[in-house]
Length: 144
Image (cartoon, rainbow, N blue to C red; front, side):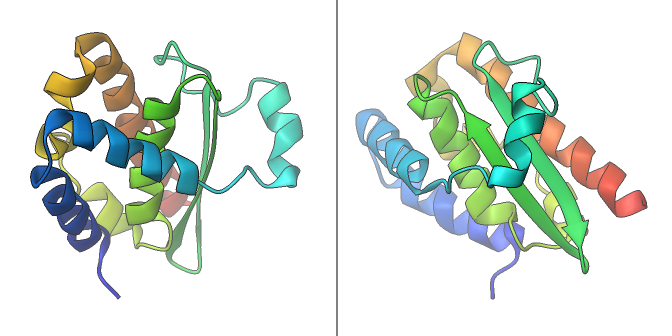
């Protein structure tokens, strides 16, 4: 089973082969593959817990470490498919990974995916905040 950095490298390679418009289409594929939020988290979402406040789009992310593996669940407003796609990419790479593997992922992921020119700076700030939020939550969960 590939590690989180190896999974991300595979995903980055997929994106690298594409033109900017095709990258957005692939991002939308990841959005469609993001599993729905488990029912046990719905009350917390409705209470505003686990929200990534730096994002203009309502984004809620739950991270935990169980048996040495990261568990990642998310809810993203349906009107934000590109944000949902980015979270789908992160879930694909991080869910089931070790905390160390998640924490080793560099902050330049958006540049490596070639999304900066396709999405613009405003979205980039929010997506950077999502990656930072996940890494911080993993760091805290691993320290428990």
